[in-house]
Length: 443
Image (cartoon, rainbow, N blue to C red; front, side, top):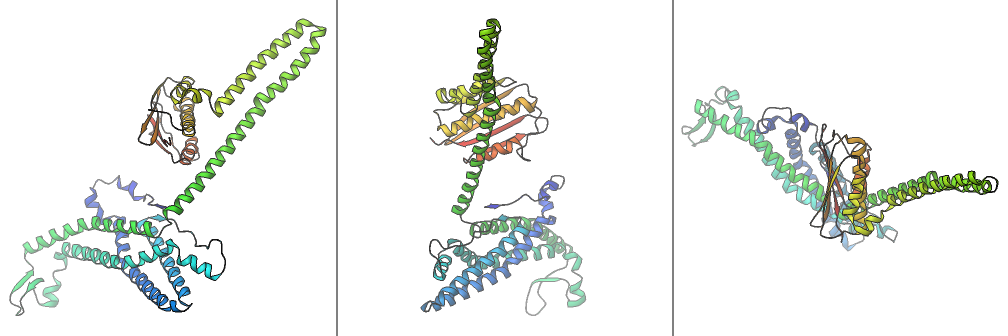
């Protein structure tokens, strides 16, 4: 998985008053990417020479067994070059690319199995493709970037160093073209020539950073596309992570249910059984006192039943199963401490799993509105966009909600991510707050 992490200079750039076109030639990003493009040539030469030499040698030796280890060594060297390239991209382009996993043989063991795994690895051959493509690309980027730099800054500062031509070369200025006899030509030395040089040089200096950024972006695509793990491997890693989140969430829910049963309904029922036993004994001695104890036990039964209903609603509310998302969310909104307007516009019902996640997402967000927002009103909107279920909870509270730092929103975002969902929080200090959740429809 590739991720270009945000450079700190972006925040500082907001404070500058100069337009980006005038700032770009002097920004650190331009010089880092310029250095990266200059290093493309030597790195491209090293990679190309290694790959062509070792693959040719290995292919030539395939008539013997020695060819297989040589080919495996060639692929291993390409992997090592890829590691250097990822480190170079990380330090100069600020591009974070995950390292591909090791190549391991499946099932069989032994030297032949390891060699076969190395030669059959798509990751290894993508590194080979990178080294072959990067050589011509490195020549091109080196030539373009160094030409823009030298011609741009050279012409822009030409009035400052023109004096070297009459002093050391016996001519009025830099010769653009001339005849063989030395009497006809164009030497840059007049004020108009100076103005022309500064104008052309300034144009190249201003345009250079954007050309460099475009070339560096192509390098980012090459590194992330060819030197990172395959999309399938990334997806497997993501699914393993999501599975862990689902398991942890399910375990936490089970612990919560167990705690609620043990500390709530179970304790109340135990006390109720003891009270009924005392009431049974009391009925024989003092019927009035026994009847009063039975009334108290009856009240306790009602409380225990309400606790069990609340616990069942927390597991999966019956109204959601029977009537769908709209009535269920209206019931949740009715329990909120602020007025909530609910709008549900769905052509049909999504699968029960997604419907349940949507219900509990809105429920948790409305609990946050009640406890933390200080809002006077809130809205809940639910609609479908193609194959996605969209939820949005808004309030006019104090704002400042953030899905970072181990908050409840962070856990909610992880649970949504486990089913390919997304949580977007827009909550500036002072409000309002708008939290949007996106879930797969999966009908």
